[in-house]
Length: 234
Ligand SMILES: *Cc1c(COP(=O)(O)O)cnc(C)c1O
Image (cartoon, rainbow, N blue to C red; front, side, top):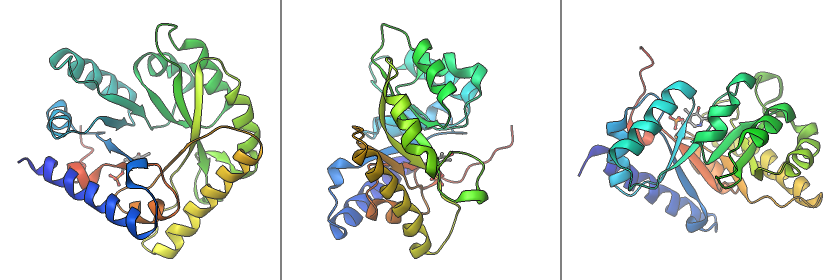
Protein backbone atom coordinates (compact mmCIF):
# COMPACT_ATOMS: atom_id res chain seq x y z
CA UNK A 1 0.00 0.00 0.00
CA UNK A 2 1.37 3.45 -0.88
CA UNK A 3 1.89 6.14 1.74
CA UNK A 4 -0.72 8.26 -0.05
CA UNK A 5 -3.20 5.43 0.16
CA UNK A 6 -2.67 4.94 3.91
CA UNK A 7 -2.82 8.72 4.46
CA UNK A 8 -6.14 8.79 2.60
CA UNK A 9 -7.49 6.02 4.80
CA UNK A 10 -6.37 7.87 7.92
CA UNK A 11 -8.05 11.12 6.78
CA UNK A 12 -11.28 9.30 5.89
CA UNK A 13 -11.20 7.62 9.28
CA UNK A 14 -10.71 11.00 10.96
CA UNK A 15 -13.68 12.45 9.05
CA UNK A 16 -15.87 9.54 10.11
CA UNK A 17 -14.77 9.79 13.75
CA UNK A 18 -15.33 13.54 14.02
CA UNK A 19 -18.62 13.32 12.16
CA UNK A 20 -19.85 10.63 14.58
CA UNK A 21 -18.83 12.61 17.66
CA UNK A 22 -20.58 15.75 16.41
CA UNK A 23 -23.62 13.95 14.97
CA UNK A 24 -22.86 14.98 11.38
CA UNK A 25 -23.12 12.39 8.65
CA UNK A 26 -19.75 11.29 7.33
CA UNK A 27 -21.31 10.26 4.01
CA UNK A 28 -22.35 13.88 3.47
CA UNK A 29 -18.74 15.08 3.71
CA UNK A 30 -16.64 15.02 0.56
CA UNK A 31 -12.89 14.79 0.85
CA UNK A 32 -11.24 17.06 -1.70
CA UNK A 33 -7.60 16.03 -2.17
CA UNK A 34 -5.58 19.21 -2.73
CA UNK A 35 -2.86 18.14 -5.14
CA UNK A 36 -1.23 21.53 -5.87
CA UNK A 37 2.55 21.24 -6.32
CA UNK A 38 2.27 17.44 -6.55
CA UNK A 39 2.62 15.57 -9.81
CA UNK A 40 0.48 13.29 -11.91
CA UNK A 41 2.13 10.29 -10.28
CA UNK A 42 0.78 11.25 -6.85
CA UNK A 43 -2.66 12.07 -8.25
CA UNK A 44 -2.80 8.61 -9.83
CA UNK A 45 -1.74 6.91 -6.59
CA UNK A 46 -4.59 8.69 -4.82
CA UNK A 47 -7.02 7.89 -7.64
CA UNK A 48 -6.04 4.22 -7.52
CA UNK A 49 -6.78 4.32 -3.78
CA UNK A 50 -10.32 5.46 -4.62
CA UNK A 51 -10.00 9.25 -4.40
CA UNK A 52 -12.17 11.04 -6.99
CA UNK A 53 -12.15 14.80 -6.25
CA UNK A 54 -8.95 16.85 -6.61
CA UNK A 55 -8.33 20.51 -5.83
CA UNK A 56 -5.83 22.79 -7.58
CA UNK A 57 -4.73 26.39 -6.95
CA UNK A 58 -2.40 27.29 -9.79
CA UNK A 59 -4.06 27.37 -13.18
CA UNK A 60 -1.16 26.52 -15.51
CA UNK A 61 0.03 23.67 -13.31
CA UNK A 62 -3.53 22.37 -13.01
CA UNK A 63 -4.26 22.45 -16.75
CA UNK A 64 -1.13 20.45 -17.54
CA UNK A 65 -1.95 17.92 -14.83
CA UNK A 66 -5.58 17.51 -15.89
CA UNK A 67 -4.60 17.01 -19.54
CA UNK A 68 -1.95 14.45 -18.68
CA UNK A 69 -4.19 12.48 -16.34
CA UNK A 70 -6.94 12.40 -19.00
CA UNK A 71 -4.42 11.23 -21.59
CA UNK A 72 -2.82 8.54 -19.41
CA UNK A 73 -5.96 7.25 -17.72
CA UNK A 74 -9.05 8.31 -19.71
CA UNK A 75 -11.18 5.78 -17.80
CA UNK A 76 -10.70 7.63 -14.49
CA UNK A 77 -13.65 9.94 -14.02
CA UNK A 78 -11.89 12.43 -11.75
CA UNK A 79 -13.57 15.62 -10.59
CA UNK A 80 -11.41 18.77 -10.68
CA UNK A 81 -12.00 21.72 -8.36
CA UNK A 82 -10.33 25.11 -8.81
CA UNK A 83 -9.65 26.60 -5.37
CA UNK A 84 -7.07 29.34 -6.08
CA UNK A 85 -7.23 33.05 -6.82
CA UNK A 86 -8.87 33.84 -10.18
CA UNK A 87 -7.55 36.50 -12.54
CA UNK A 88 -10.30 37.86 -14.77
CA UNK A 89 -8.32 37.15 -17.96
CA UNK A 90 -7.94 33.48 -16.97
CA UNK A 91 -11.58 32.53 -16.54
CA UNK A 92 -11.98 30.72 -19.89
CA UNK A 93 -9.65 27.77 -19.22
CA UNK A 94 -11.20 27.45 -15.76
CA UNK A 95 -14.71 27.35 -17.25
CA UNK A 96 -13.56 24.80 -19.82
CA UNK A 97 -11.58 22.39 -17.64
CA UNK A 98 -13.03 22.27 -14.14
CA UNK A 99 -16.14 20.77 -12.54
CA UNK A 100 -16.16 23.12 -9.56
CA UNK A 101 -14.78 26.56 -8.64
CA UNK A 102 -14.59 27.40 -4.91
CA UNK A 103 -12.98 30.82 -5.13
CA UNK A 104 -15.56 33.12 -6.73
CA UNK A 105 -15.51 36.45 -4.92
CA UNK A 106 -16.79 38.95 -7.48
CA UNK A 107 -19.83 39.07 -9.78
CA UNK A 108 -17.70 39.96 -12.80
CA UNK A 109 -15.71 36.74 -12.45
CA UNK A 110 -18.91 34.72 -12.07
CA UNK A 111 -20.42 36.34 -15.18
CA UNK A 112 -17.35 35.49 -17.23
CA UNK A 113 -17.32 31.89 -15.99
CA UNK A 114 -20.99 31.55 -16.91
CA UNK A 115 -20.51 33.06 -20.39
CA UNK A 116 -17.47 30.89 -21.06
CA UNK A 117 -18.80 27.57 -19.75
CA UNK A 118 -19.13 25.35 -22.84
CA UNK A 119 -22.71 24.42 -23.73
CA UNK A 120 -21.64 20.78 -24.04
CA UNK A 121 -20.75 20.61 -20.34
CA UNK A 122 -23.01 20.59 -17.28
CA UNK A 123 -23.35 23.87 -15.38
CA UNK A 124 -20.19 24.78 -13.46
CA UNK A 125 -20.57 24.24 -9.70
CA UNK A 126 -19.46 27.32 -7.77
CA UNK A 127 -18.90 28.38 -4.19
CA UNK A 128 -18.44 31.97 -3.08
CA UNK A 129 -15.24 32.54 -1.15
CA UNK A 130 -16.08 34.47 2.01
CA UNK A 131 -13.66 36.72 3.88
CA UNK A 132 -14.29 35.40 7.34
CA UNK A 133 -11.32 36.95 9.15
CA UNK A 134 -12.00 40.58 8.22
CA UNK A 135 -8.92 42.69 7.69
CA UNK A 136 -6.56 39.79 8.34
CA UNK A 137 -7.39 38.45 4.89
CA UNK A 138 -7.59 40.18 1.53
CA UNK A 139 -9.44 37.48 -0.35
CA UNK A 140 -13.10 36.70 -0.32
CA UNK A 141 -16.34 38.66 -0.40
CA UNK A 142 -17.10 40.62 2.78
CA UNK A 143 -19.60 38.89 5.07
CA UNK A 144 -22.06 41.77 4.69
CA UNK A 145 -22.14 41.30 0.90
CA UNK A 146 -22.49 37.54 0.70
CA UNK A 147 -26.28 37.33 0.30
CA UNK A 148 -26.36 40.00 -2.41
CA UNK A 149 -23.58 38.29 -4.39
CA UNK A 150 -25.22 34.89 -3.92
CA UNK A 151 -28.53 36.21 -5.29
CA UNK A 152 -26.81 37.55 -8.41
CA UNK A 153 -24.69 34.43 -9.01
CA UNK A 154 -27.72 32.16 -8.58
CA UNK A 155 -29.27 33.81 -11.67
CA UNK A 156 -26.36 33.05 -14.00
CA UNK A 157 -27.46 30.38 -16.47
CA UNK A 158 -24.31 28.30 -16.82
CA UNK A 159 -23.38 28.25 -13.14
CA UNK A 160 -24.85 26.22 -10.30
CA UNK A 161 -24.42 28.08 -7.04
CA UNK A 162 -23.54 25.38 -4.51
CA UNK A 163 -22.39 27.20 -1.40
CA UNK A 164 -19.71 29.06 0.49
CA UNK A 165 -15.98 28.53 0.90
CA UNK A 166 -13.75 30.01 3.59
CA UNK A 167 -10.10 30.01 4.61
CA UNK A 168 -9.96 31.49 8.12
CA UNK A 169 -6.86 33.09 9.51
CA UNK A 170 -4.70 30.19 10.79
CA UNK A 171 -5.03 29.40 14.47
CA UNK A 172 -3.97 26.38 16.51
CA UNK A 173 -6.76 26.99 19.03
CA UNK A 174 -9.77 24.75 18.27
CA UNK A 175 -12.11 27.28 19.92
CA UNK A 176 -10.92 30.05 17.61
CA UNK A 177 -11.10 27.69 14.61
CA UNK A 178 -14.68 26.73 15.40
CA UNK A 179 -15.74 30.34 15.95
CA UNK A 180 -14.58 31.26 12.44
CA UNK A 181 -16.31 28.27 10.81
CA UNK A 182 -19.42 29.02 12.82
CA UNK A 183 -19.58 32.46 11.20
CA UNK A 184 -19.58 30.75 7.79
CA UNK A 185 -22.42 28.50 8.92
CA UNK A 186 -24.40 31.59 10.00
CA UNK A 187 -23.84 33.20 6.60
CA UNK A 188 -25.14 30.03 4.96
CA UNK A 189 -28.23 30.27 7.15
CA UNK A 190 -28.72 33.86 5.94
CA UNK A 191 -28.54 32.65 2.33
CA UNK A 192 -31.11 29.95 3.06
CA UNK A 193 -33.35 32.53 4.76
CA UNK A 194 -33.11 34.60 1.57
CA UNK A 195 -34.51 31.63 -0.33
CA UNK A 196 -31.26 30.52 -1.94
CA UNK A 197 -30.82 26.83 -2.61
CA UNK A 198 -27.24 26.03 -1.51
CA UNK A 199 -25.91 22.75 -0.15
CA UNK A 200 -22.15 23.12 0.25
CA UNK A 201 -19.85 24.46 2.94
CA UNK A 202 -16.27 24.13 1.68
CA UNK A 203 -14.16 24.61 4.77
CA UNK A 204 -11.39 22.93 6.71
CA UNK A 205 -7.86 21.96 5.69
CA UNK A 206 -5.30 19.56 7.20
CA UNK A 207 -4.82 21.64 10.35
CA UNK A 208 -8.43 22.64 11.08
CA UNK A 209 -10.54 19.95 9.45
CA UNK A 210 -12.02 18.69 12.73
CA UNK A 211 -13.32 22.14 13.71
CA UNK A 212 -14.79 22.64 10.24
CA UNK A 213 -16.64 19.32 10.33
CA UNK A 214 -18.03 20.14 13.75
CA UNK A 215 -19.44 23.35 12.21
CA UNK A 216 -21.08 21.62 9.28
CA UNK A 217 -18.46 21.40 6.52
CA UNK A 218 -19.62 19.33 3.54
CA UNK A 219 -16.32 19.55 1.64
CA UNK A 220 -12.96 19.49 3.42
CA UNK A 221 -9.96 20.49 1.32
CA UNK A 222 -6.96 18.47 2.45
CA UNK A 223 -3.46 18.55 0.98
CA UNK A 224 -0.63 18.01 3.44
CA UNK A 225 -2.29 15.21 5.41
CA UNK A 226 -2.66 13.21 2.17
CA UNK A 227 0.36 14.10 0.04
CA UNK A 228 2.86 15.33 2.65
CA UNK A 229 4.55 18.71 3.00
CA UNK A 230 4.75 20.87 -0.11
CA UNK A 231 7.90 22.41 -1.53
CA UNK A 232 7.26 25.41 -3.73
CA UNK A 233 10.70 25.62 -5.34
CA UNK A 234 10.33 25.33 -9.10
C1 LIG B 1 -3.40 24.48 -0.13
C2 LIG B 1 -4.84 24.63 0.15
C3 LIG B 1 -5.54 23.67 0.90
C4 LIG B 1 -4.89 22.45 1.54
O1 LIG B 1 -4.11 22.83 2.63
P1 LIG B 1 -3.38 21.76 3.58
O2 LIG B 1 -3.03 22.55 4.77
O3 LIG B 1 -2.21 21.26 2.82
O4 LIG B 1 -4.36 20.67 3.85
C5 LIG B 1 -6.91 23.86 1.07
N1 LIG B 1 -7.55 24.91 0.54
C6 LIG B 1 -6.91 25.86 -0.17
C7 LIG B 1 -7.69 27.00 -0.72
C8 LIG B 1 -5.54 25.75 -0.36
O5 LIG B 1 -4.92 26.71 -1.06
